[in-house]
Length: 532
Ligand SMILES: Nc1nc2c(c(=O)[nH]1)N[C@H]1C(S)=C(S)[C@@H](COP(=O)(O)O)O[C@H]1N2
Ligand SMILES: [Mo]
Image (tube, rainbow, N blue to C red; front, side):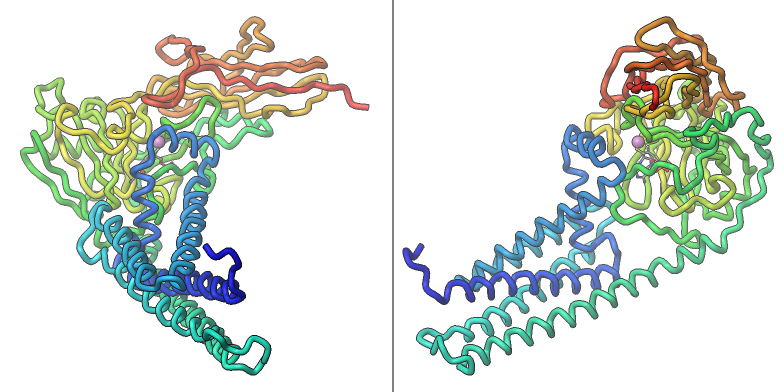
């Protein structure tokens, strides 16, 4: 370091920072265009983001989900942008000191992006191209700008004259920056257009898709299932309010017309390969099922209830010659794989024991939304989503739990996980300010496939009081409950617990979500104060 930085240091640094950022913007725009022309998943940002998601230790992931909820993807995206900006500035600063080193670093980042893209599920060598193209463009722009910027401060140039050679060249540098940014904006816009066009087929196929009429329609939801208590959501969760949990940074948009499902593996005597029409030539049933996520904390939001329409998976497996383990079948695990490479392992026994395990195409009377698995997803009553509810389904393979660990199992979650009995207080909310007098305490309770028989509430650790239950809509959905409370002034803790259809009372022992779902009673603290 120089003891007295030369007066040229500041403009040189500015040149570096500006060149680095502009080069990164240009490179990313071209990479996005190349990705849009091929597979959107191959964009360096998405590929690196996906690799980060896959490599993140479970503890950090669970912390991020707790902290950011379903905005975790947004936060990851912003994090990547911040890192990219820092890298761009660093590379630019390096470039004005040692251009070859900076070009090498740029190439290095291109390689990292390319390797990340190649490591993604379903990747081909072509997926390396967006990152490599981006790095090449970025390096070229960096070279152009830094060599142009160099001439703005020739050693010994006049530092006083505003019309000196330095100032002329500075204008040229400025024009170059503006030109590159404008070109990048154009390229970025083109990438966006092309991307929208690429998914247009999928969007059109969803718009054209007419849901089949159920061979066995579900009876209407019982009138008393919805208690209509203010602060309590509807019994059937509207699609747009349905929680979303998946690893997809870009929601896969699958074209229903080209979609295929392959069923094969151990014990399959008649392998099947079906398109959507062939799949739906089978009897179609309708069934209400509550879906919950293993990552849901006690009292958490990752639960939703929908009316699903689809084909019975057990029948389809039987058609393929599969026998459940209890009838001597060799495979005890059904591994579903999605178009984006997610793998989800479900017990074959559960799928074939007569419950409404579905290959669903409809959700609440409409084709599945893209975010929830269009065109076909699995739903199995009684099992957490990560061991049953594969979205954007592409393949079903029969194997054993001994031979294969699915995606989340490799990340310290249990191979098998039945939904645990849970009850949640939805109103009043934690830290609500209430007035003394009648307060409707209400929420939902679930124990899918066992059903809910009873919900009890207690105040400040007192004796358990019976809540009134909404009418049951079968054993596979949640039940709403309400308990009228005469609130008295002061701070109070409300607690809730449920009893499932087998008579088992929900345990009060608090455990975390890993490895097979949280347990414990949901508690809410409220302040009751007389007004005025
Ligand atoms: N392809 C794919 N399917 C998936 C997942 C995923 O990450 N990718 N996540 C699973 C998990 S953990 C849950 S809880 C449910 C959530 O389904 P939803 O997003 O429709 O609510 O989807 C399951 N299916
Ligand atoms: Mo989940």
